[in-house]
Length: 173
Ligand code: S3P
Image 1 (tube, protein in one colour):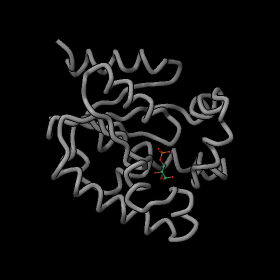
Image 2 (cartoon, helix red, strand yellow):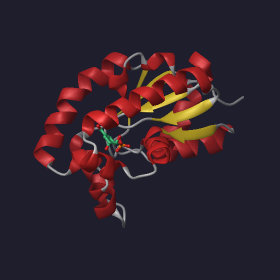
Image 3 (cartoon, rainbow, N blue to C red):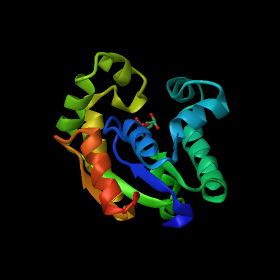
Image 4 (spheres, rainbow, N blue to C red):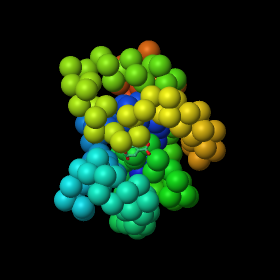
């Protein structure tokens, strides 16, 4: 496993961040999230970066961050934004897990939260549902191509998924 890191990848709203935090707690590792890091680096929210600087600026920030992750981060659980895989060579950061789900299951998951509106609002690429549905179809084969492991998440709780990953990768004795 590259740098002993685990990279959680998948479409927006699939639950990468919550799972990363749970896995970190269960395995005694640190969890980090690329969107959170970019917001800290830029001192602003992702939504504002898209509005003010445009998507290509954000993608460049992801690229810069990937270089840093490859060089400087180890023993961690890293949740990455839904488009982060486009930086290329994700496996140089760590063992890549694709959290797979259908678009409908992702929407059901988001809508199950009290703050569902907020969760949708903060994601610029989840504003137009038809476009987002096309995006997940386009990305699915690309996610598959850069994954070391694929985990089906629909209908499972974060704890179930976390246990599945811990067993599969033997993360605990
Ligand atoms: C994006 C996903 C978002 C965030 C940005 C772009 C994408 O992260 O990086 O809004 O291109 O899929 P989440 O997957 O954590 O929502």
